[in-house]
Length: 282
Length: 325
Image 1 (cartoon, each protein chain N blue to C red):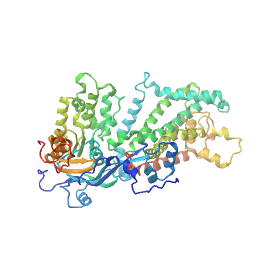
Image 2: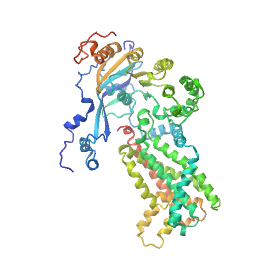
Image 3: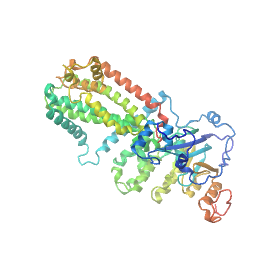
Image 4: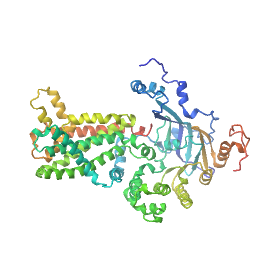
């Protein structure tokens, strides 16, 4: 963070944001037909209170400002709201309270959902590119790069086969290659670094670094502390939907490692990050 | 409604228990070192940041949608081709499915119930009806599931959500064009001569496509909020089909019956019936202009505009909410 002197230009401002999921039919209430009818006839609030709909408060009162040129890591244990927050920044999930301001349209690195298993890899490259908002000419222009980067054709002409015939590693490589083909203003990456074999991982790390250079701001969600340390200079730590820490990578990771591995410090008792200093080598 | 009183806002013990993220102990208050002293909204305004995921204005939305036109067509084609890609006969099913459908209806309504008695060229009449009706029906069904069935896509990528219902309708249009090829063969086989009026197929289909898309957009918004509608639609659609004169001529059925005038008007103003009759008028020479309801082109255009424009605005109004749930 210390490298940005002079005027710092904000690219993402998250202002006191809450995100709540509503899940239908989880059966916390009575799962009978009459109960369902009651829900339909009753008001929405009442119905939700009767627990046909469960609310999951995934992100609570999170505020931060991201600046141009920063690479920000998001860490936290499973289900702490990292991906949810990322999706909200991308404008894909509505916020319950608070607002998120962004510079341009942040894009989430990922096209999985747009691809169709029954189509050939070739057509999926086109479809995925278009889904990300590239023009037809752009897709045509980058087609060879995408296929080359994915390495799908290294073992024969696989790109003209349907994606359902790919191994899971091959499919993941193709998906990453498509997703990484576009330049982004604000780039959001959700644990994409862990795809494919070792050589492909190396290639994708390099590509991410390139994307970082082109992008204004990068967010990276990962459980791999090493890749966070390699790529990010600032880290947000989310726990149970709340922003627990926000600061330079080394500092936050140290606390986080102490939290996730309390036995390294004093054994037994639940550790609060403020109480455990040192004990874990940075 | 029922005896149990539940406070509307205050969290009940059960609501709290359902709150999954509260299971563990509460963490200490967050540390926020880099918080700007300035009000976030002012800061955002100063650097020209915009609210993420906010609904664009209607003209901006139309522009965005137009920019995604290649995605819309590619998505429609991809869906269509992937539909039968596992079948041995592959794309042959594009033509086979509508033909088999028509054969079933012919067997029931033409042979068993003998509806064909007063209708000349019954097979072309029936097949045209079935194909045109199927276009509207499947567009509505696909529209209902367009958002609720593609939540993964909606939650992963940013694009104007109207792309999905429009794309699904386009897929149905492509499907119909396959059916039309089969239809032309049937028409020629049953001795219906090609005439200049076949050109009318183009405006009729354009209007019906606009109507279907509007309807699909409306259903997409409703289906996104209440997925249960997808369970209800088949019944509504079947009822609609039976009053739309797919298998019989409304004109012939009603002649000689003493029905109130209003019933006649409603049956004739039914958009599905109008588009079906227009297509029959265009294709079948024995289906004459006097069998069409009065002012049929005006009705057809009116329905298309009402549904198309109304549906688009209705869908756009909830643009920022799709993806929750």
